[in-house]
Length: 156
Length: 191
Image 1 (cartoon, rainbow over the protein chains, first blue to last red):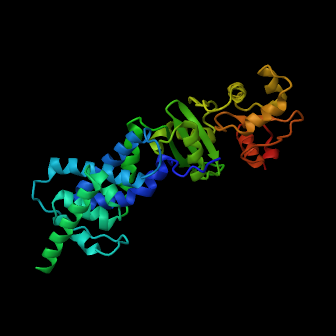
Image 2: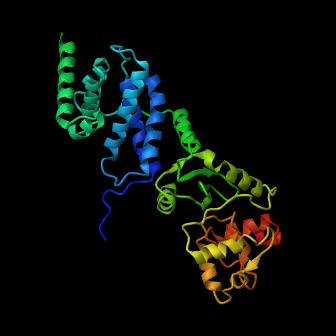
Image 3: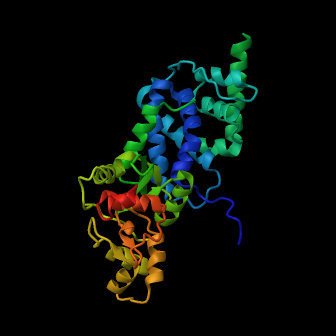
């Protein structure tokens, strides 16, 4: 029998494996307070869609995609354009560029999502493109322009 | 960043309240040890002794669907009735059970088993006869051994022809305690 490489886990396991990093991501995108409502909405949407999944590949990227959409909806409702977010102190282990992630709250939403997903959570540009509803190339551009903007800020 | 407990609880309750779970479950303490109690939208579908939640969750997902979540609200009523049973205040469970993933023979056996009243015992052979399969006592034993909802579907009330307890998936000690609680066997056998 073939080994089921990408079997879909029971929702409980998916939720337990993803909840902390999704909450951290939402906190970076929206601030701690708004992240609480967005967290519940993200996993309710995931639960509603869970029965329709056809395989278990890319489940992590799928969770970030839903969170990104929920964050965009929440921002449309609450944060006035140009509004800045509090900086979130985080304790996750992160790769280099981590300091850029901490500053990313000052970026416009799309660049912020691209920088945080790339350098905070190590998602591929393909997956970030999916999360942002754009292409991998557009995700790469959003991320580099975000990084350039932050470097300018840091060095000026 | 760790999700605060209160936020985690709120999500689990909201998921249960929305009615989109295939199975809601929770862990609960009882005089015979921790139990995992699970319900599908059609009824109680699992009571498990010495539960290993990881494995139980996989089994539940295979039987009922992937949307399995620990959500205490979904099993509140079952937990309350079990508490009352262990306190000796409840002799009959007023709960729907969902045996849908089981083979027809096992459903027949368990369906007949719920008629054995509190405080009484019957034999494997007696149960086989009552489902019209008088020579299937051994198969009846197998069906009881794999009963997914023990206590509520009372396989502990079935004993050997000689009156010996024979066996129990949760261990003979538990069978003895349950029958002792119901007054079905003399207290001297319980200790």
